[in-house]
Length: 247
Image (cartoon, rainbow, N blue to C red; front, side, top):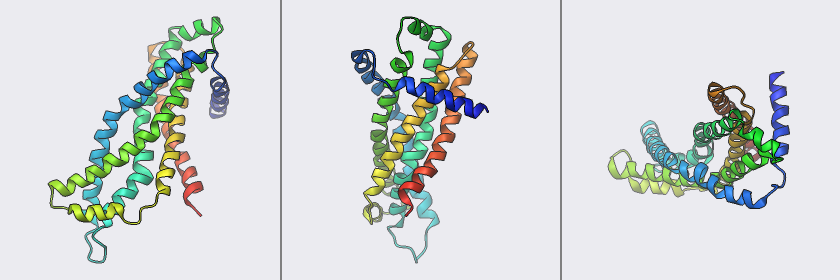
């Protein structure tokens, strides 16, 4: 019954969020700040994780597919498609759920327990719309760019394996990442990332907005936001894959 209750409260909150802002100027003042805080601030972790994952994926694929029956370019092809289909769109979103989700939940939760949200409501401000809408829309706008950037950096990480080791040649790797490229996979990855960005920010905002008590409850709200948004992402990953890739 708790799941049903939380789901109902979540959709009621989203109904308050997705209305026309009372003051459009305030929304456009907050929007660029959220782009920087949630999107650009996530670039360092995206770069670090992507380059290392691209490198280790290339190494593992090459070392475990050494077979005269397999073409030399198979490593680059596997690395490219893995980054496109799963890592940069799904695993990266799970990682960012920890960073961005906890940030959103703790920020809004702190405002709730310090009664700042109550003060907004008393003044007649739609606090859900004012606080949550800029975060959700900003992260949904930034996430496709982060995903594309992650794919590119991951491929560079794989290329560096060819440059600095003898595990694979750069020529075979480059042939592999170009071979049988399917542009539709990029669209699939972007659509998934936008959906997951909405899940991360909206679920985190829900738990932060409904936090009650003291500082300990803000921590619990952040934990619940990260755990539950990760589970929902994995579920919708199956749904979107089934809708977009199966025939």
